[in-house]
Image (cartoon, rainbow, N blue to C red; front, top):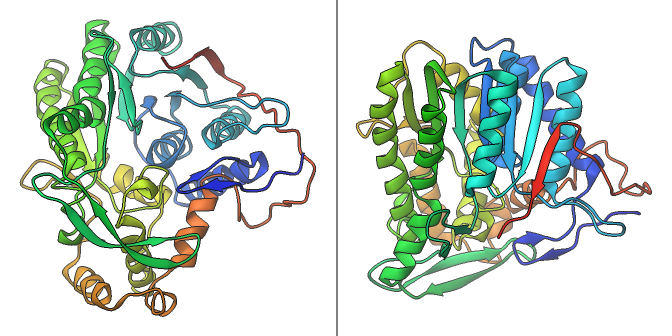
Amino acid sequence: MVIEPRTRGFICLTAHPKGCEQNVINQINYIQSKGTIEGPKKVLVIGASTGFGLASRITAAFGSNAATIGVFLEKPANRGKTASAGWYNSAAFEKQAQAAGLYAKSINGDAFSKEIKQQTLDLIKADLGQVDLVVYSLASPVRTHPETGVKHRSSLKPIGQSFADKTVDFHTGVVSEVAIEPANEDDIANTVAVMGGEDWEMWMDALQKENLLASGATAVAYSYIGPKLTEPVYRKGTIGRAKDHLEATAFTIADKLKAIDGKAYVSVNKALVTQASSAIPVIPLYISLLYKIMKAENIHEGCIEQMHRLFKDRLYNNKTATDAQGRIRVDDWEMREDVQAQVAELWTKVTTETLPALGDLKGYADDFFNLFGFRIEGVNYEEDLNEVVEIPGLQSVIPSN
C-alpha cells in the first residue's frame, strides 16, 4: 500500500515503515559519528519504542556496544492498516542492531503488568544474567494497577484554579486561547498513579529481588520542568505532581541500590516534540518559539542529541553533576536566562499573523510527522509498501487490559 499521513488532532493514525526505519538509521548514524561512549553493556529500556526511550536504546547500543532489552506496548500492522510508529521503530532498531552483531530483544505488552515484568525478568536471567543500566521512559495515559486492578487515567489540568493562555493548532497555524478547568483530588491521584514513580520502583524492586542488577548498576527516569510560562498547566499542574513523585522516588530507589553500590537519577530533559508533549496545551506554541531561538543560537537538540549528551557528559563521565534537588539537567540550554527571556518577549507578540516570523512552526510540524516516519529526507513516499513488518527479536505479545 502507499502510506500517507492521516491525522486527528495531535495523533497521527498512520505510520510509514520506511520513514521510521530511516529515522532510526539517522539516529544511529549520529551516535556512531560521535565515537565510543564508555557506558553500559547490558541495558533494560522500559518504554523503548519512541522518543527518549528509543534514543536511549540507540545510544546504549551504538554508542557503547550494549546488549539491550526493550519493553513497550505497540500495535502490529494488519493488512491495509499500518502498525504504530513504535512498532516500526523497534523493528528497524533490531534489524540494525543484529546486523551490527549486537544483542537486541524486545517484549511487547503492558509494562505495568506483573506478567510483562516477569517475562522481562526471565529473559534477563536467561540471556544477560544481569543488567547495569535500567532506563524508565514510559509515557502511557492509562495504567491498570497490578495489585488493585483499578484503571487509572492521567489528566492534563491545572491545580487550584482554571487556566487560560495561548496555544496553536500546529496543522493550521491558528493561535487561539485555551481554557482548562482545574483538577479535583481524583484527577491528581490518578495522574500520579499513572505517571509517578510507583511503577518504576516496582520494576527496580523486582530486578533487585531476583539479583538481576549488576554491581554499580544505574537507574534513570525522565522528567521535565519547563519555564514559568508553562507552569500552571505543566509543572504546577497534575503532571507536575506526578513528576514530583517520580523525582522523589529516585531517592527511594537510590537508597535501596546502595546495597549493590548502585545509583538512581531523574534526568530533566529539554522540551521536544513527542507524542506525549503534542497533547499538552500551550506546549506546541512554546516549543515553536523555543525552536526558533535555540536554532538561531546553534544550541537546538533533538531526542538523540539529548541522550548522547546525557550518557557521555552526565551518566558516564565519572562524576555525575546534579542540581540542588539531585536531578541531572540536560535542559540547561533551554533554561538559559537569555533563551527564556527571548521566549517570554515573543510570547507577548505572537498571534496567528506573527507566528510565521516569530516562531518555527514548520520545524515543530516536521518533527511531529517525523515521529510517524513522514517528511523524512530520502524516503520515497510514492512507493507501494508491505505494511506488515516483523520485529526480529520480539519475544511476546500480551495486549494491554
